[in-house]
Image 1 (spheres, rainbow over the protein chains, first blue to last red):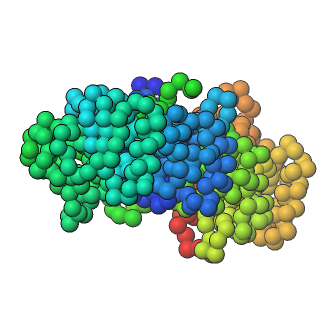
Image 2: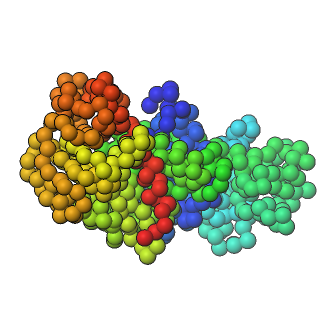
Image 3: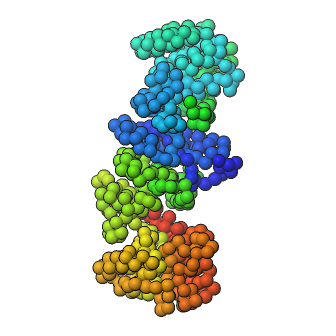
Length: 271
Length: 271
């Protein structure tokens, strides 16, 4: 790996990373992650791999034997299923029962982690807002919401309110997070009164007629507001929060932080 | 597929082609073929895939199910083994019992072809030397030599002399070529006297102390001389032939013609 890898052509020596999903045409990371890999001096490329759920076992069997494949990024709908193919996994992956990144272990097999939540936290930190000590409200307890909730708890929020229309999955997530004993986690509402750190982990804002996920008129101007939606780049929630004077983190920033975290993961010392 | 694909970034929509070998780090085609694919308007990339012989079946099983993989280029040591994974194949592949390119069939499964010899013929044609009607001498009856011999016979040489230190494989190839009834094929020697079209399909010239594959002092100045060796770019054989006034085709030209032929193959109407 040389200083010149950034401009090195693709060759037989280029190491492979694959993002696995179905469909996969919508993912943008092959370009950005490949550019970052090369900027860091790695002769490597992130390629898309479209694998149907019924062929996931076959894919992993072959991927394990593909000698020039070093890591995998996992996306919808394979994050939960792929966890089962990891010989070992991070504590947060085990908590979530899911992975979004996998790398080879020295001893063979794959090590998995789930770092979607780290992207959300990383975007906030880029704006000088570490979650430590914050009073957080999170809307959405699905796959992304669960990962972000866990990341917020692990990053040291003192309390976390979770709002989700599906009360069962909301309460299940709350109970599991409370079992960690790290923060007070409870059911929230769309009312952000009293919260210093607010996150949207729902698709609200992707379509022009989506309702706002929180009552923006109750946002404190000192609150941080983050959103997972990447298209449009600035959602109505973010626009409204900015109008109130809030510091904001958009989906694109979360996504950028996540891409860098993916590469960090691939090259960390093997556990 | 657009005019802009040439400069399009790698994305989730990029179609995959893979060159399969073991080792694979030495292959150069990912860069050149990817550039040609993009120059032709295809959002596609050729990636290296290092697959051990004992995992070739598993690889093909998974590759068949990988939805965004459209074609395969096969290199050492898999050209013969991969023929067995083709549901159908070209006449020349069946003759050689080997393939170096595979594309998907409309009906499912893979269609294989072997076009190494077309690269050699293509390089000659770029120099205005169609093999049709030529009296050819070929040195080397191995994998590359067999493919080139067949391509020369199919391109219409009137006679083909084959020289190889291994008399058994030489005579076997000669017998099989004669069974086609297209040209008179017989055992040759390093003496090019009387031949108008001379090819080297051995590694001779890769190392500085390699002996010359033919008696260059007996080359006719009107003969065409082609060589498969790509490093060095100009072998002692080619240098000597040029010194005698011969038209020459170097390994790099064969290789370039082969890369274009590979892309032609991938996008031909499905048989």
